View 1 (tube, helix red, strand yellow):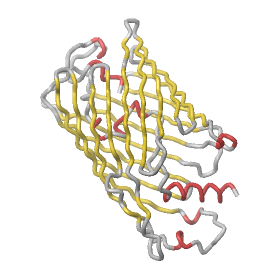
View 2 (tube, helix red, strand yellow):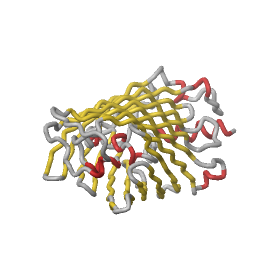
View 3 (cartoon, one colour):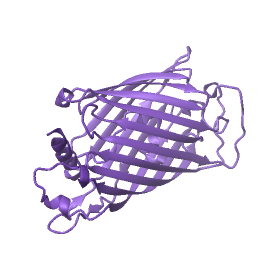
View 4 (cartoon, rainbow, N blue to C red):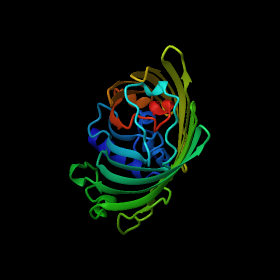
Length: 323
């Protein structure tokens, strides 16, 4: 029965006009590029990130997401300064390069639904005194498959499953804008701009569409003399025809090497997170505790993140290390 209910519920998530169709992340603050293409190359670093998320622990075939991303800034000159903490350097990033590039691949499995996607990103950064305005565009595509071999349904002649002919290939476009100052960042992006149609076959199953997603994010860093930084932030997510979901976050950093935080998600979840920096490597963990009725069947969700960053130099702002 649990397999049946899970399969029906998750398939409804894909096709409902009230659904969130893209992967959910709790530690997006550590890699905002996953939600906004304008972030690619914003900090002047070359970085690679791996995020693995398992949702609704306790459910068989629960949603699982693995995402790998990389981004860089094309700089024509990059004077390197070694052996000093970046936060202690007031030197601005080299202004000789404006173009950022990024790539992102993911696999998102929800019950019987399996999606593998890829994204290529171009961004352009404009200097305004000590502030920066960034624009980004991404070409995206994903392959959708329904694993009917492991599906359990009441009706073996289900017309929707029977009309699935192999995998679907869905192209789309994402757009983003991002503004950052030494203390503040603010970004807006939209994903699945084209709202591509999913064609499952004949017999009335041609009208399923991908929904346009909107993301509004912002945060402000309060830098303390004792090495601590307090950063409240917010993320607003919405799709056409659905309720708005808001994440209220607060993170605390200590000397760029340790951080911890808490988030409240209006859909009914509390998120606790923490992480550590070791040389060029960053490791993070987040645990989502659901406060909705699903907690009767699941004891939460967890997410692991690791990244490596290159280019600690005078190329970047001292305050961008927090991204």
